[in-house]
Length: 165
Picture 1: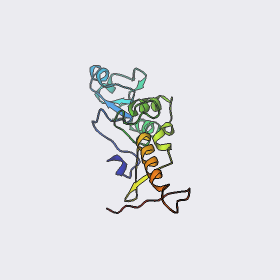
Picture 2 (picture 1 turned 180 degrees about the vertical axis):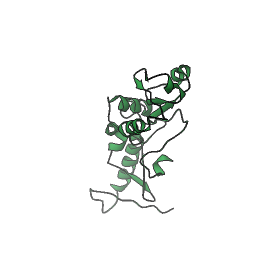
Picture 3 (picture 1 turned 45 degrees about the horizontal axis):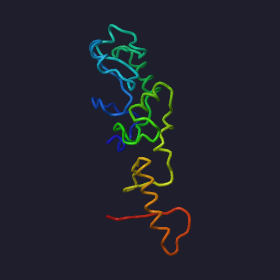
Picture 4 (picture 1 turned 90 degrees about the vertical axis):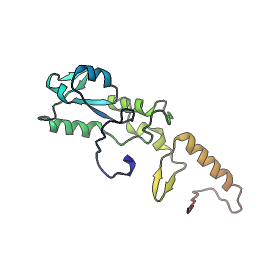
């Protein structure tokens, strides 16, 4: 659903398993300990009245530090990875959740996602690009190329296919 929105930022509540940069809103340290993971780049909520940071994650108060929160969102948040469900791709050697954590730590960049860099094959439906994991993209590429190479008139180059359903 996120890929269909045209917005600079989208706030998603819940979805604990999605591979997204997170602001963790907590009431107490017990919640922090339970919910904190590498995808959290900021902590807020009631706990912000008692802490300035927690395990090297900044804690900001939404009531009077909204500009700092907005600045941190602009600095840390990046385009959603193409396969936010954990473990769908792993072409880079990491799950998407692990990649989110590595990007937030500064160890990786959003451009390190291999799925976005594969340019041999693209699939568009009604003009909207459909992301494919490298494995699926390779199968798609090899299957189409295998059929097309056997056709009379085949020439090496860009192949375009239109299927109207």
